[in-house]
Image 1: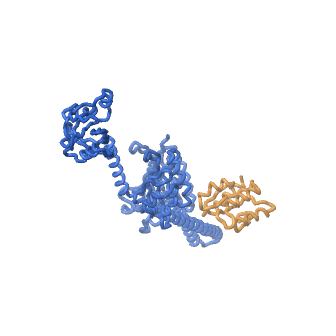
Image 2: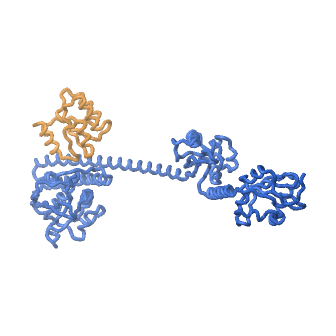
Image 3: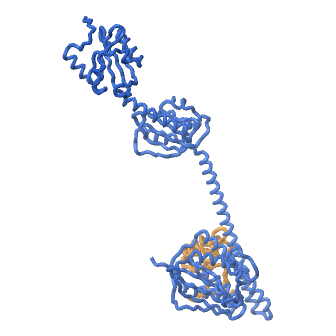
Length: 97
Length: 503
């Protein structure tokens, strides 16, 4: 879609496991906040401990988690519900810059 | 032996001087037939009657003590050789009309004389009476007291009032019969060490003590009872003792326990409510996110097809509903957070936030032709606020767009300064050309519970949030007609916000 190859994970644990399994790491990870097994903050920290250069866009309806997300190492925060166009614009801006 | 019946003075100059100078008033009576006659006295006796004692020389005892049969009897008995015990008497000196307490001692001198010594113990007696009166007053107060009182010395109970007897279930006699340390039987084992230590320290008059503490007591029946204990070192019979005042706080403890349980239940209920609120908000937002993404994807596909204008209109409607749902969830969250005082205040620049808000609104209404312009001479203005300032702008601007039918949507934001009660305020006027607000509902639209007609539906929660935020900023908000007396020509939402005060 929109020229991106998208891989999905069903929960925080799956996200970390899939990340470990990739030979070519993704350019951007769009991380949800509240997920079963492991939440987005924990998954973010785990992934960044494997590769601290990964760009993570954190998505949540809860603005209170924004500061914690940035402290955990995410590069961008997008409030839910967002428009796909806004997400794509954010990803494109990062990729192009 | 000389049996001279005449009144005569003592022989022997030395004895006479000794006698005269005795500090205790002393009187010498000689037995003559069945009576006694005063034959001598010393200086101390004369001083009592202001030097008039010699008027009484030769007076008979039966006459002198005619009103005091007790003294007369003692004199007679002593004169006959009986040993008379010393006595305390209350005596009236007729000469001076004084009443004094005397300690009287009778000494029989053979063959026929009686020496009477009188020690004035009036002061002592008065002190004793005063002390007794004090003690009686104390007992009266103590026995009628609503609190339990005890005095203990060397670990033994010396005094206990009936309230303590009622409290403990033991009689006052039982408690006063206990040996050293036995009073600890009315203290629960968990508290005996504390009570024993405090009791000992206070008995020794030490400073490092606790004046007030609670302990669990045990009544004679075995029932436990919570007690508030106030105790201190006092002097009792010349030595340190422990005065304790005890109050039954069983009911108070039960109430405290209930309150704690109630607080815990309230906290648990609050935590549950918070959990469900968060869960609801999260899940609803996820549902809305899915809807929003689905609508977007559909929109894109529809744009590639022909004759889909109606479908696109419906899509737009669905998107607006998604946005409305998301806004509702966000507003509820913010309202509860404001009520819980979760937002902190700082100095913020109002104009840049307004510009951000206008960008956001334009983006939210990409399909509308919006013309929002700021009319002010100010380059900046500073307020004591927080991130919720944008909520004020967003809500008012979005309402203005939603309730303006004509295009382009014209909104003017006018910013000026005002002085009110010596304080500087910024006045923001959001002027639109919308459908307007009738006069009878201009106030009601800011109230949360207001759910009247179509013309204000959807405004309720947003504007009540705006009003709440403005209040936390110590500002004011109200709405007027754009054109005076003609509400149908649009509205003017006016917000007054105080300038930040530099410290």
